Length: 429
Image (cartoon, rainbow, N blue to C red):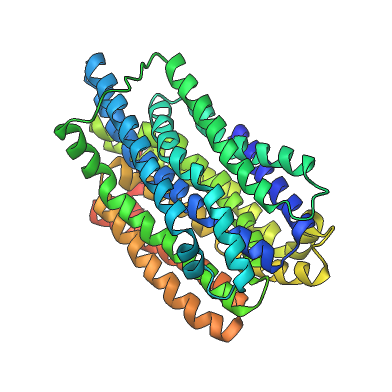
């Protein structure tokens, strides 16, 4: 978790630098819209494949057939790289259309600039699937440190480049280029880490029909679920672009703090606990699996409740401390702080969802994962549309928190259908 904390700190540092340099303006909105596409692909591949494929790799390794396992890994990595290449080329060709759809409230100049930045960000799409798969291999072997670097390498690169280009009139192109460079560097780091762990990648390998069926059964529903769920965040930014110039970036800076807290606590606890849950479930040790899940929930609550309290009580001072400098003026602080307050209510529930949902992955109940994400995506969009008309940007933030609370209830219901009721969870030994 310490490496992930460092990564989160670097992400916040980059946000601070961008806020100080650009403020909450139409240019910043265009930058956020351009980066949202590769971040979307990175999040979908990371969250869906990492959680759903870890049990598959654990099971494959347990077979004890090294050659079969190496062929399985090599074929999937080559497929991941081919998929990334197709996505990158598609973005290069469709960049103006994509930015126009995602930022309907942007000015013509901002849309044009956003399209140019999106094309520079295309290499992120090329490397993201391959990075994810290599992370799955290392996570399944419980080598979590390298995966934790995912949140550190790219923002660290951006921070350095921003420092070198600070005096430029418009550093946005350099910012996006630095993200692409960071993804390339991290891909190389992960590839070297996988090789050092004893894996040998065969470039000519390709997944067999059996491999594809195994993977499709694991990642199909979760990937579709994450596409739908993350797609709702596109809708949030589309609505923010229509509220006022700078609305997208103000919401972005607030949501990044919310997401950093949820990732550092919920995702970290869920990621480190999933291999053990999967192994215990595979061995039929249900009681020990439930006890392990219960301990993960307790750890999450012990960490996230104080964090949420700090956000709710000190949202304006937090935003002032982090962002109030340079082009980020008092009005931007007030607007971003208000959004952080309404998002703060969802920090506890968002973290709990990650941990509880890891039990569905361990049970390989991928349809249940999809049902939860799809249901919550629909709820989030409906709430965001309705509440944004009443409360503006604050309504979009409130919709996120309400949806997170509803998601906890829905995951508990889905676990209950698999026999893991709250009562059984808390009495397991």
